[in-house]
Image (cartoon, rainbow, N blue to C red; front, side):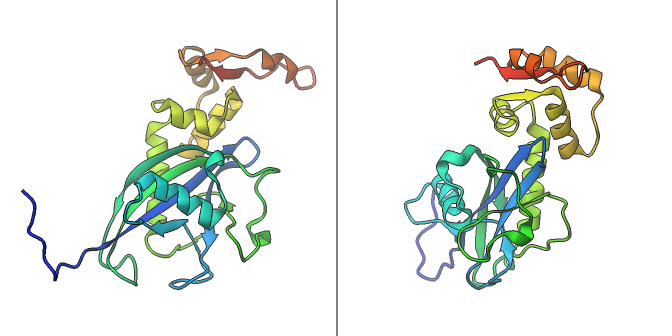
Length: 228
């Protein structure tokens, strides 16, 4: 049974907010924001977000937010997952709004992550930062959304293979996997346990690429790829 329509009902807006995320061995784990061109909070960094169009699917709204606010197009999105909904009467000064939040694992920027201070102040440009870099105090409740995205990834790494594959890439080393684990948990994993977990994972196979990455006479790092 549904409620009868009411001309006086005040329906909240539906917003889509996305946490862009990337990982590389050189830059570690990063999340992206973008400078807001309009009020409220014009000029401040915030997560890319949009109001959902009437006939738009949630995931399509997330892709639109990435494209129009950060310049991350669909081809750069390796994995997109809904992480939850956020509400509260004071989260948006314009009107009551419910945010459906996503995490998007994206291809890292070409040439690595630039110093945030060099990012242009105009145009749809992603500003990549370490999740713990400074006290950003993002507007709305975007700090809470980022925390939820990190918790989503932290609790699903290796259990959610598409997510893990998107973060590590098609080929990665044991040290890459250990670094990702350390970045997510704050604890450096035991090397023996990491090697054993990778070696016994049926989704992985050791790659011949290891033979080309030896460093100055030392043992070459184990390199892994996915079985399918």
